[in-house]
Amino acid sequence: MIVCLKNAIAFQLKIQLPETFLKRVAEESLGKDGDRLTLVPTFQSRNQQLEAIANLVLVEAQHRQPGGALYLDSLANALAVQLLRHHGTTAAQLQRYQGGLPTYQLNQILDYIDATLAEDIKLADLAELLGMSPFHFGRMFKQSTGISPHQYVIQQRIEQAKRLLKNSDQAIIDIALECGFNSHSHLSKQFRQVTGVTPREFRRG
Image (cartoon, rainbow, N blue to C red; front, side, top):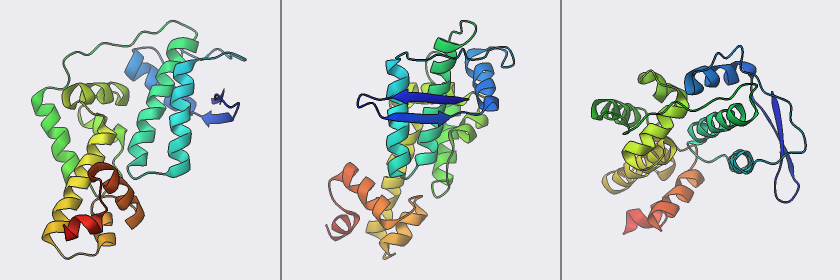
């Protein structure tokens, strides 16, 4: 399945979503038979939600931010849900989950993230721990914490970096890798966005 979208400056973006992925999203997020719910080919139409998601995918693909796999997973699920809801062969409504994650489930996820910060955490892995669809897991996690899984992971990586900068003499590149960032520059960019200073300035302060 290839989705072609144009943004406000008429730049065409092609995003390919595997059929198996769309079927899984249809079943897990919309409660539909993935083999029966297909997309209707649509041309020369505008959908602001789809365009907004696609633009976020483009920005992430261009800059490859740390934690990008988790973020792209979230965007892909949101894109698939919107496509199936608005361009599917049958009407599909989101299953409703209210109140966020129960405390024991939230703690299970937070403990897992804390133990795997240095790894490439994926949305599907987090959702699978609770037996939920990635899309609904992302929504319920945000209801519980006020931020998305991707934002939470970045936040925790920055906090761990702060501790290591203050309490160890490790090189900043080693701290970056230990905290799940893929380079010194990735850590520095995210660190400055969150704290207003670079890791080196934070260590000296």
